[in-house]
Image 1 (cartoon, helix red, strand yellow):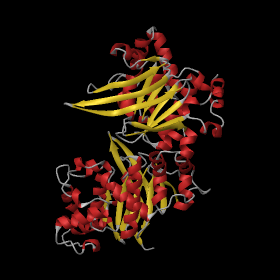
Image 2: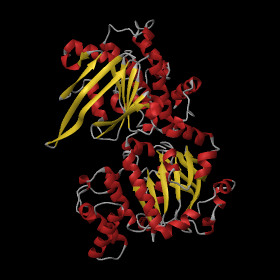
Image 3: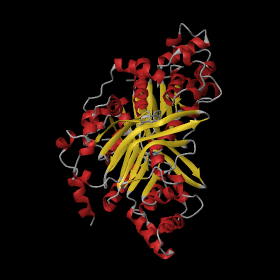
Image 4: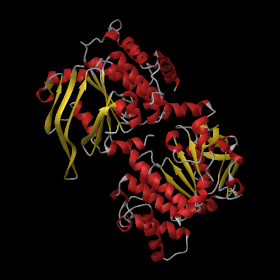
Amino acid sequence: MTRQLLNPKESGNRTEGEQRTLPPFQETSSSRTTPVLQLNGLTVQIQQGRRITPIVGDASFTIHPGETLALVGESGSGKSVTAGAILGLLPPSMRVTAGQIVFQGEDIAPWPVKKRRILCGGRIGYVFQDYQGSFTPFIKIGKQMIETIRSHRRLSAKQAKAVALESLDQVGLPAERVFDSYPFQLSGGQLQRAALASTMVLRPAILIADEPTTALDVLTGERVLDVMDRLKRQTGCAVLFISHDLRLVLKRADSVAVMRGGSIVEWGRMNAIRDHARHPYTQMLLKARPSLSEIQAGLVREDEDELVVACKMGGSA
Amino acid sequence: MNELLRAEGISKTYLDSGREVMAMQDVSLHIGEGECLGVVGESGSGKSTLGRLLLALERPEQGNIKFQGVSFADLRGKALHSLRRHIQVVFQDPTASLNQRLPVWRSVMEPLDNFPEVTPPFLADVRHSRRESAARLLEMVGLSREHLDRYPHELSGGQRQRVAIARGVSLNPKLLICDEPTSSLDVSVQAQILKLLKHLQTRLGMACLFISHDIAAVRMICDRIIVMKDGRIVDEFASGRIMGEDRHAYTRLLIRGAE
């Protein structure tokens, strides 16, 4: 079953050379299907007193079913605000002032808050960096999952429990034990997987993962991402993977959008970004974190001139 | 290379809600003068405990640490004070390690104020003036005079870490311990800070113990690498041998995550 779902996905991902020559929005067979999510010129502004400042400007990208799009940028680039806008979870001081958020063919940006709430957590799932905030601390994981399930699906408590247990099992956790645990009884990696189970149980069309592994160890993080990839293949949902670490997402994403100062400066297939990044900022991000094999091959030299530049940049960074 | 520091068979336990937890078990290592030794491991592997033990902030229950042949255990009072001059530290979070209420020049000068008799060669011509000394130190880390009177909150994360580094090298220590110095910074800033540390380490000829979970960063700036897991050293090798066939299975896992 998993394999059957897996195969069309992989075939959609073939020939690198061919894809590079095409702009991302015309690419692959998946463009014929309806995108799960499409941002058209999204603009978000923040109001501080009388001052209004744009924090996301004219952001556009498209995510197709079963695809992982990585949104990469450093702190303050506006990537989390973009996620907040999609989820309808922006703080009161921020507002979407222009652009569309098209979810499965319908612009949800003008929807009233109540209608957005039903979508968010249901058809649009999410996990955040702060896995401790994903659960209420003094209620057992199982009880919280049942509550989540029953607020979106018409199921009896017993049915909901069965669904929750299955979902916990799917993320590789000891289902019964985790179901009966309080959040503080689990490790960071376990909690993040429980959070994944809790959001994936509702079979979202898209999962928004905002820095899901940043607070975790490298290996624990890898395991969480492995689980995320497997769930994606099993359910065919799309993923919007938000991270500050371009190297990390290159291993997981089908396409990559690089964000800086509230704008998307480059957007393309993963291979194209990795091997032929056009924007200087993307090139800098790649260079800032060379892979071990690149370091080993001596591709990264400690250049004195470069250091001087780095020091000067430090003055304004 | 002359040996600067040697730790032999050190163990350390902590009490965690009544239970004894082995943070470090029978760890032995040495650092040569001017050498950059990397310590890689995940959280809970004991690498930060190692840092605190080598700073003499805590004492091991077993084993012995010697700095230039003198055992830590024998050091009290004045002797311990003078040891601190030679072993300095840069922590992960400069927001926590800098006093928020002091302008950065006063934070930078704290170590030198504690050791009025010390004049590092790079401050020989300005040591008479505290502000001039601070200005020189800021220049060394790529900041400028205009940052002297700023407060930590007026600086970016990378700039704050540069201030912490300026303070760390101010006494011209023989060993600088860096505990995850880039982990709380943006990727592009991380690279700059790594380069700065490497540059200072070479220029000042100081040894460095670089503690990190980021094996790529460690590979980039260290001569030799130690891998820790569950309070033990599981692997040790020269940086260039990181892809060698004799690597421990756990090291390979960490490498796989960084490729």
